[in-house]
Length: 247
Figure (cartoon, rainbow, N blue to C red):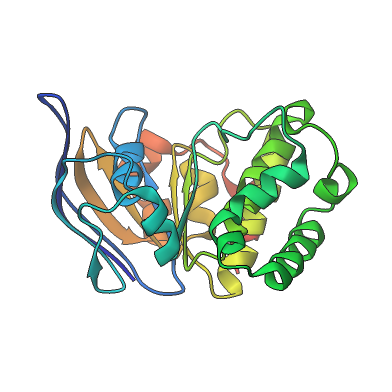
């Protein structure tokens, strides 16, 4: 579904990504792990049209995303849950969700939007309880749930997540990744970017390791969990708390 070939990205004269190649098949959940500053977020920004001037190829369902702005990319079926959540704090939970369906409102898909709002409230009951509450007053975990639900309101074919575990308590992280595993089991294609390799690889089918802008390793998620170099660099002593999210 997503094919990235020899991707090079720059911030001015600084090269952030060097000839990166990555693929995500339809229905897969793929993890991209790496330390802070390795280029993970840069890759997602390029896919979403937020970083112009990249070189190489980014194909979604066989069609190039070169030169496209974010709205047409969303319309093609790609949604992102950004790092730091970036919810609209003064707006209500409901209004944040409705903004996720902005393009669908323009298409007058009101019935479908109401259905999806109900689905989000079933998936995240706390959002139903606080639908009229200002989003900025939610806890960090609740804001992350809202950010995921907002992205899903666009009915994406491919969901991108940038550091969804950042700043969250371990129990909340476990809940978030369990939800991602459930979405994958329902057929959604997911690419998750994470420093928390334990959580990401526990639910993924395949993984990539990015270091200083270069792809250094790719393998099945179970294989990466057992790789000594990956263990040394990214895994703590106990990652079993996340493994029950794998389906």
